[in-house]
Length: 161
Image 1: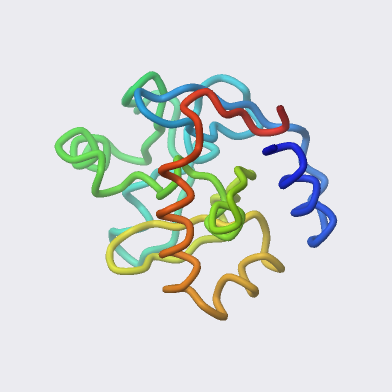
Image 2: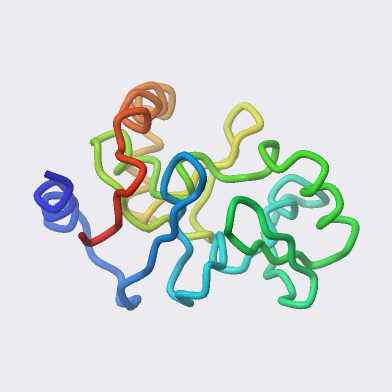
């Protein structure tokens, strides 16, 4: 079922040239861990940086790392790592870091950490700029649909499976 839906997603958008990504299983839902394949969440970007300072995401440092539900998150400073440790849910991307637009369509697809939007204090990633442009046309509608679809995504779902 997910294979078919993801094929439709790929047919609808220009596919980026990135290699196939890996997933890991969080406690409740799958988390997209990017192309490194080493259980690194959000492509190694510092999830706190999306919300602090000028709001521009920065790459984290592998030496400043916090594991959360089996996934390693990298941070640009110990201060950001501490903020994350105190309240991970405040900073984690929605839908395990999968594309918010694809999730609204019932599919899991990679979320690009550089193609994002914060809505009502929550971080949403999109597959690429083209997909984000579609998502921006009805953010609240897509979020409503994605929230419902995310509840139905199996715990063992895997991108590309």
